Image 1 (cartoon, one colour):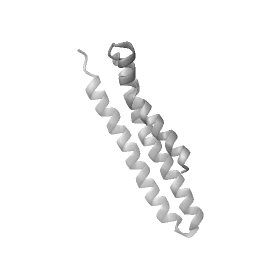
Image 2: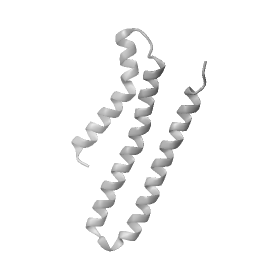
Image 3: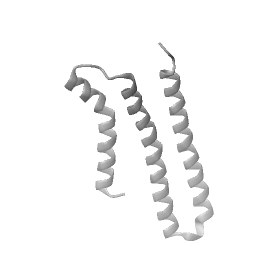
Image 4: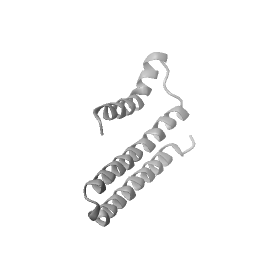
Length: 103
């Protein structure tokens, strides 16, 4: 990945993480429950999506350099994609358990 792409990803993730604090500082009021859930779900989606994008980028580059190792690259890529998706599912379940209780 290029340096500008990495900087854009870091800026986006930093903006998502610090946006509740910025809104609290500007308005003086805490976030609503729905807005907090939206930010958490966006973070839960972006993490695995970035892992999947990095996996695809790296595996295509590896296949371009060495096409004869396609079965090994495909196996490693599939395992990585499965782990990225399972982390996303676990994150969604944790958020569901934390915010699913009616108060």
